[in-house]
Amino acid sequence: QNFAVVGAVCVASFLLGFAWMHFTHESSTPSSSHRPKPKLRHSLTNTIRQWKPHSKSNAHKQHPQKQPQTTTTSNNQKNSLNIPRFDTRKYVRSWERNARDAALHQIGQSHPQSVSLEGWHVPIAFRSFPYARQTHGPIKNLDSDYGDIAYYSLKNAEVFARIIPEDGGDDDDVDVVPGAFDPDSIEPERSLKSRNRKRRNAKGSYPELDAGGHKILNEDATISELNNYFDDDQLVHVWPKANDGKTRKPRACHRVEFSDLYFPTCNNFHERDLGRVYDDPAQMIHPRPENEEYVKYLAHGYYRDVWIMEDNPWLWGPDAYAKEREDAKTQQHIKYGVENEERTAEMVVKAYRSTALKTLQMKHPYNPAHWEEVQLEAIIMERMTKSPRIIDIYGHCGFSTTVEVVPIELEEAVVPGEGYADNQDVEKHNSDGVISYNNFTIDEKLQFALEMAESLADLHGFEGGVIVHDDVQICQWLRTADGHLKLGDFNRATIMQVDVLNSKKEEEYYCKFNNGEAFANYRAPEEFAARNLNEQIDTFSFGNNIYGMLTGLWNFYDTDDDDVVQKKLIDGKLPYVDERWKERSFGERKLIELMEKCWIYDPKERISIFDAVVFLKEAIKENEARKTKN
Image (cartoon, rainbow, N blue to C red; front, side, top):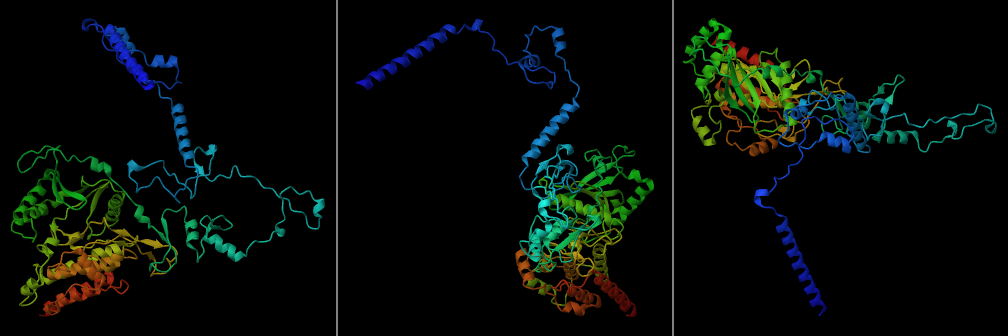
């Protein structure tokens, strides 16, 4: 009965409330003819907000209510744009306050050993406060006298004074400051040897200093001592193991000087208008000066597109254009053994007024590692400008480079088609004696091998330090119009670092490096271990180039599976070489002999590229003598 009464009361309350709301809504709703317009929110004026403490009076002045539409012209003039003078002091105070809050937030947090927020290897969009560095360990103090620079401060350290009694005096008769002590009365808790051993292994130990305050580097320094000694030197990297990758002997590897000689020329790139109309001189009697450049797409790699930028020939004078037209007629009868003969012939005659532009493909996002690769390529090509065997670079900015146009593809002529074949097809092809799949003569093959070796020798023997190409393939060389080879594409190259501790030993002068996991079927066997590498990896791959020039096929022509080839190399299996090549001619026998020297598994026993150059020069000389004699 109680539940029924409570339920009835609830229902009655709900009905009365609903009826009251409906009645009040009907009585307060005006007719549509007298319905007022909805109220708008207060709009802000065009005046930039002043830097003043917030208050009701100021808020009322800064946010006046919007006036009706009958506002006069004088009222509109009062709301005109009013930009106050920039208050530098208030801005600086705000910046300092924000910086101090950010620094205080870092107290107690661990930081890297040495962080440089400004450097040539960091793009402009990612730079921060110039030359800021953080000492190893957490931030412990902020000293207002030095702004907001974080460092280990000694300003607040307690001063500890001591008084030592004079000789012969009684301790009771001498006024000794509380806390003072006599050093002779201190007994060591442990032996000096164990203390030094523990100090060397401690991460926070400090380097030894001489009388002048300079750091001392011992010959048998541990890795902790090396880290402390080179703590403020960003050009030195400390590694725990020796060059063999097994001995627990630390190395201190120093970057060579020219690896930081970076000279971007971004203004030259921004001056290029890739979308400008081009006036073809073959169709116009008087080309317009402003339409002087023609840009067209050429090809692409995995990361970058390649464009050809041609100057209008009138910039080079009428004589140059007349010669170009004559050369174009001659090129119609020349075949280079490439897939696109027409395009190659056109590039040959226009190479003198053209340049190649390489740009990052739009599908690839920004990658710091690839950014550094392109910068490294620009540094190396700039340093190697004096070499006639290296493609010249004309400019660099970001991911883009402009380089010399070398018009003729080499790989398409050396390895025609796919370069793969079944063993039965190869045996059938060589049934009447071994025959190369390409059309180069033995003299051309010897000369090409020599020019390849000389270009690699320019890198390995560079006076500033050893440069490893790290991606030796036939496609990295291009042919000029006069038939010579030039090497390019250095985005995988490595500039070897000097071992500071062993720089007096010729064999251990440079630190071996790690180039990451190796793929594809053209690598040296030690690259699959991805550690303890040197310039000899280029020599092994150069042997693969000789195989391609000799046979016209890839080294493992019976399979295009990279995993299969890698397993063969790791197991010590080399490409098959038909013994009949050695009997075919003197030049081919010498090429096979050199190729086998390049394919020696032990990098220490493998022939150097300098010895390969000497070998090829002697082979060419003897081959010429044999032809003259015959």
